[in-house]
Length: 149
Image (cartoon, rainbow, N blue to C red; front, side, top):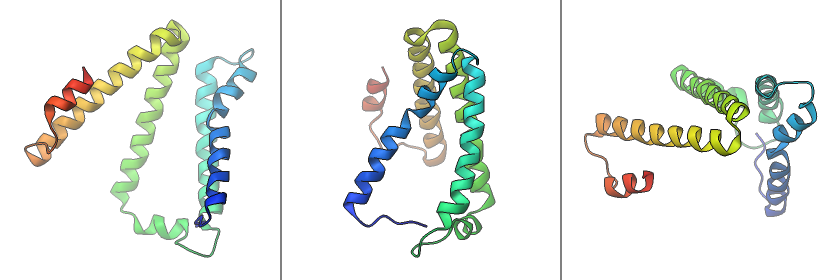
């Protein structure tokens, strides 16, 4: 694993990350004339999955300090790996539905409705799970629900 130990190198990778962050929107604009938005998103997600796997097995095992990717994978429980994979699949499905809503209704309608539903539903489900697990949440519910509203 590569562990960055210099501030200058960390800032360099931060800038590279910021440049690449919007890459899917830029490449979608280039492919806009020939591909539908939803199909491009599916292809981009699959390509990004393959790129992440390639990076994990190459860059994740590169360097002289820390554990390699395979060691980390062997250390993890299978239930944790399945949970993380399922979370990624659900997240991408939600993003695909959001992209479809944006394609139909536009950004100004699709994103606030899709995002609002996701935020309210996520906070509510998380709150219920905390109550079921611990019995009483540690945080102030008035602040939480005040922020939601």
